[in-house]
Each structure stands twice: as C-alpha cells, then as structure tokens.
Length: 245
Image 1: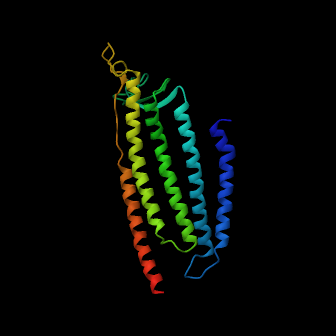
Image 2: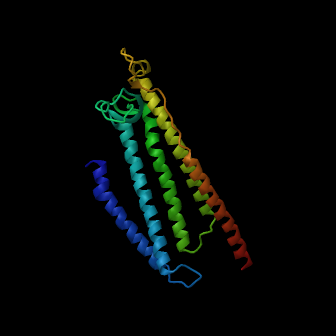
Image 3: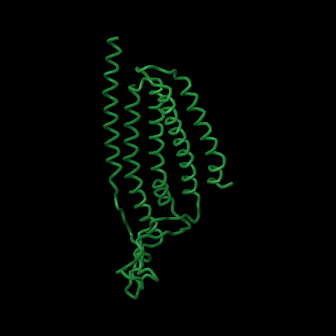
C-alpha cells in the first residue's frame, strides 16, 4: 500500500477518532464553573482545539517521515520549480491582447541525484513540517494548561518562543535550501549545457540560481515572540499573586 493510501484510509481516521475521544475526555474532566472559570462550552471548545493541534502534530510527523524517505530514496527524483526561461508559449501568439508569453519554471525527473542536492531538497520539503509540528505542540500544551486553568506557567512562554523561532527558521531556511538545492541539480546536470542559449538565439534554458525570498515568516515569528513575552509577564504576575495568597 502506498504511503498516501495508508494515511488516507488508516492513519487519518484513527487519528481523528483519537483526537475526538481525547477532546471529550479532557472536557468531561473539567467541571462546570461559575464566572471565575471555564464554562462547559468553553471547556469543550478548548479541548477540541487542543485535540486538533494533537492531530495536526501527528499528521505533520507522519508527513515528515514520508517526505524524508521519498526524498532520499526516489530515483528518479522529481524536482519542481526549476528556474527556466522559455520561448513564447505555443498557441498563445494568436490570442488577442496577449503581448508576450513564456515559462518561468519547470519540473525535472532527475536520476542519480547526488546526496548533497537530495538533502537540500529534503530540507525544503520538511522544514515547514517541522514548524507545523512545533506550533502544534505549543497549541496543544496551551490548551491543556487552559483546561487546568493555569495558563501562565513558565513552560508556555518557552514553547511559544520555540514555535516562533521554528517558523522563522523553517520559513526562510526552506526557501534558501530549495534555491541552493536546485542550483546543485543544475551543477549536476552540467551548468554550461543546461543554462546555454540555443543557436537560433531564443533563450530556452534553465537558470542557475533563483531565490525570491519571502520575509513573511519573520513577521509571524516576531508576532509570536510578542505573545510569548505577554505570557511571560502573566507568569510573573501569577507567581506574585500566588505568593501573596
């Protein structure tokens, strides 16, 4: 059975059922409270959020294993988004209001891929999954401490901070690893041959290196770090309150 069929028919249904059971069990343990604590509805809501985070973390872990195994063993290996400069797209020259056309990327099935390029491409695929796993752990942990009505613990700011760093490192690192991995593939194929210009003068070749860096992961990381600082302040206030009591 292929890995995706295994996930679709066995892992995902079992994970969903487990998440629902865990959510209901956690919520049932939280008694109905008055104005000073969580209501029954709030308990169920937080429990389902925590269960969804656990499910996401489980699926992220499974996906990491599958992507890593496929990336290191597949031969030939599919390489997407190779920078490519193509001639006008056939059939579009006659379409009105299209002044020009071409290709910016291509995919290649490459056999005999060197290990260095494989690892870079595996990092491109798996780093976002690692970030998702870190976020899932932080959210699940936060849901548990909220159910226990002790959200301001010393571990929560640390967990949120780790998730923020994971988002930044994975978001930027995935893009950089992918760019250098595709450049390594170009080197392996022969940079002079695959990046040349045809005799007719039409540029139809692979690019050597292309990186359109998206800096939004840094913004998300900074936002989460501010949340971690807010929880750190709440932790100090709660500790001082406990000492007064």
